[in-house]
Amino acid sequence: MLILILKAIFLGLIQGLTEFIPISSSAHLVLIPWLFNWTDPAITSLSFDVSLHIGTLAAVLIFFWRDWITLIKSWFLSIKERKIGADPDRKLAWYVVLGCIPGGIAGVLFESKIDDWFHSPGQPISQLAILVMAAIIVLLALLLLAADKTARHTRDMKEMKFKDALLISVAQAFAIFPGVSRSGSTITAGLALGLKRESAARFSFLLGAPIIFGAGLKSVWDLIQNAQAGTGFTGSELMLFPIGMIVAGVSGFFCIKYLLKYLQSHNTDVFVFYRFGLALLIAVVALIRG
Image 1: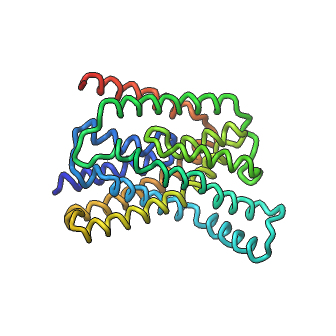
Image 2: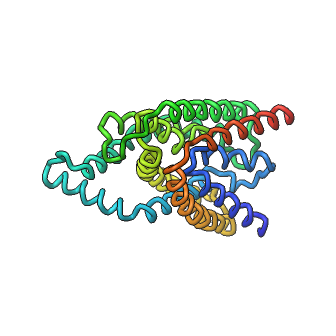
Image 3: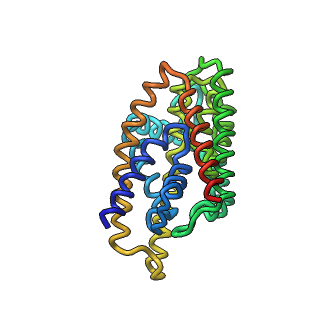
């Protein structure tokens, strides 16, 4: 059991570090068990994956708590007064709400099929799935590189228009594919639209919170249904979920803090090169294993 706990802690740490950096946390949660041949049903399940995402959701809510209070107040005031006007906070609140729609639709229609391919508790991932993931990782790296190199980086988050929010939210919908990265796709779109790097990252984190919350609720419901059907995890296995969640939340909080500072004065090249290296590594390992 100690080994399983250490694995849960390690995966929680990886989730917290990779959820907000544009290198795809979902891909890492699939790839690490695959690289080390971990087949434990609990830590390779989609439910454990989502529980780690709930940990990083807590990090976003806590780190941006002032922003959330302002946005929630502004949203309710806009409904009460039936007016958005030129208030940037009211606009941003509605951008976050409406921005969840494309991702929510994509999740309902396609996520279960995609997850079945990449999340098979106790079963190894196919070589084809790994190679497809490697290709996706490279593709997003190229898009991020192009967006960062050609962008103007002149606009703040509160200067966003509805069109910008819509395009970024559509980009978020592609994050259902492991390797794309929710933060990677939305930051890339934000940069392409001329947002400053820090502003693109901030909106990315705010936009992803409701989607992660919805996925978390669904995961909790699935766990309850499985427990009632007698097909759920044992008590000791369920203990892994809060452990991984807490580690993901703490590491995610500090990742947000230092990433935003980093993006104030650095470009995204380090993340692009990391993606290239990761894709090469997993492609080579997949081909060697056959």
